[in-house]
Image 1 (cartoon, one colour):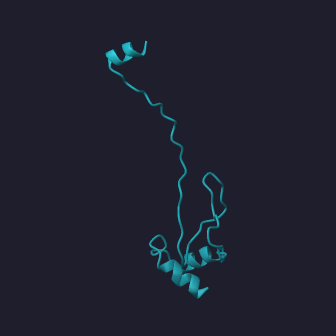
Image 2: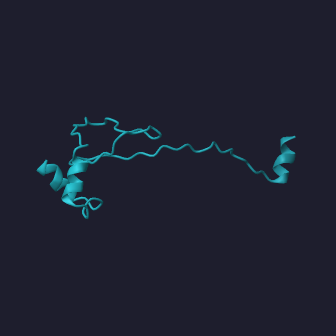
Length: 84
């Protein structure tokens, strides 16, 4: 528990909380090792917990779609006349 308490005290969001409050937060902690390239959350999924990374690297990926655009070609009037 002391290790978790020290970890939380270093995070700005928890820095001002009293030790008793932090202990209450720690009771909900679950330690888990995540494999390389494993998804933890996917966009739009509901979650029952908050993730705090103690060590390692992670990526946050935002997916979005770009509507297809149409390519409009412009030709000079004389070029159009030559096509007919």
